[in-house]
Image (tube, rainbow, N blue to C red; front, side, top):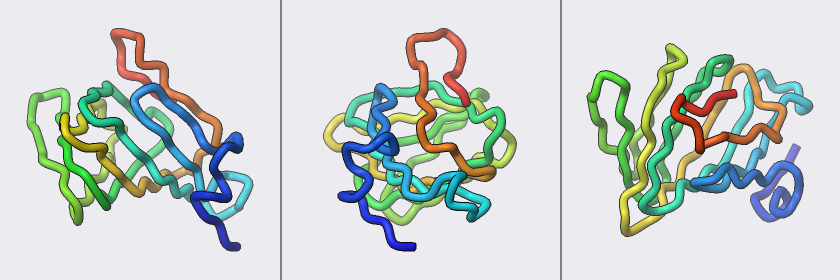
Length: 127
């Protein structure tokens, strides 16, 4: 199986989730047991997120930002840093003002591929 960002672009697997773009390279239908996404978090944005049915790990490949847990602990995210949300953690994900934050995200169980966040709520957006 070979996939590229260009091959996923402008398909149902390129999802604009409000504060960024997620290109889903591996999804449930691929029967791998996990999904892999190329995620761009737009510069200057803040998203309140929670994955109630998925565990997520993200590896930063470009840009910078931070993740903040609901207790207020902030961790810097820069290229080469991985963070894992191993307890369905509610969190704030922020991209720095001057550049997009680019992540490779892995989800278990895998995403179907078309899920979208709803960022206009007071509660964390989840799926």
